[in-house]
Image (cartoon, rainbow, N blue to C red; front, side, top):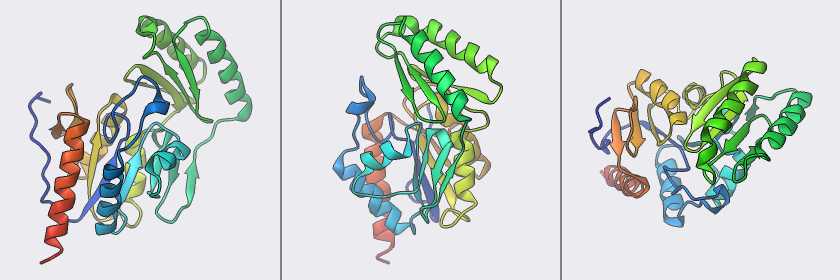
Length: 253
């Protein structure tokens, strides 16, 4: 789509909200442990959830444990590891797993391979692995080749490139499938989905939201299937505040 996309609307009704985290609600940092959601943004998310019967979820490549820590003291529906693990509004967990022997073997192979590439980092997520090269961009091709080789050897794995990272995860798992699952459940069912994300991993989510005639929002530059765009994390925060204020004013009348 064209680079110049309109700023997303704030005046639509009966919405269900889905937010990516890194690069969307929180600035990307050199190391994932340095990332945080500002307290005012967390407060706005809870307020928006309350005004929409709880129809707000975080959709991320991070684990649900990490998402809960970043959202403290709030407790939202979640899709972690790109949807390989999901918690619905009732607190029930839906988890896709890989055989323990395969996970152990992959961990050993990837750890050994990345040890030869100083500055790269392996993040093990239980049923998925993220190969980070933000600290060593010169190894991008080597890391990608490693991930592609592993995926070709194990047909139950899928490859998910991102910003300075490539992930190996169960095949068929993506953010679009996670959003679709939420849209089939209360309190999301029957609402118009809104999804805000910044990375290649979010494109599957944009596709599903577009299929529902929803509001798909790309954060930052780059080609996208999204119909709207916000310039960066600070623009997401400002838009989130405008949406919340608009809904608050509407409920007064």
